[in-house]
Length: 183
Image (tube, rainbow, N blue to C red; front, side):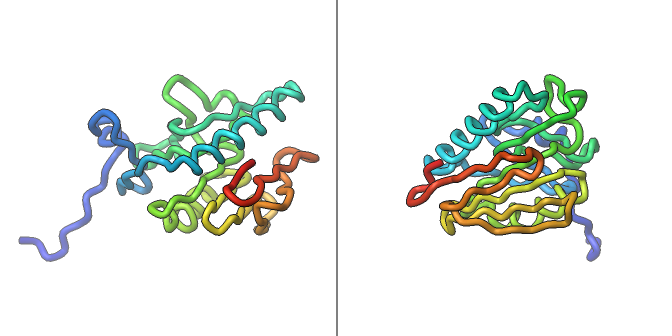
């Protein structure tokens, strides 16, 4: 037996071969299985989607806002596949029936207990190096939002009671709310 056995590298084909209803992400060839989201997670996601979509629509914007499950082929390779909670894509040539090919402009991840290390570390690095312009980590338990503006090399932290400015849309801010993460 080989003592230096390599870890297996998975591909997007392995993601598509998962049993019906099983969700996972693929980061650098490693599979991360996803637990179903909580009610609070879905409520925050739905309200954020609604606020962002309304903002884009009210200005006849060209960007698309898409909620999970939605495939993002982050590096246009076969070893990276993520499903951000919310993706905003302004270069519509990246979109097809399979998903987004390349980095979205803005990604929002809503933290769950099982996704914390992945959202705060692994995805932070992947989104930064892939070309995502803005990344929000929304943490319902801490009632905090970490905002990473990669273009401006900026990191800011907000609580749910503060207006959070959206870097890719001047003059647009979102207040998530208090208590139960109500937007």
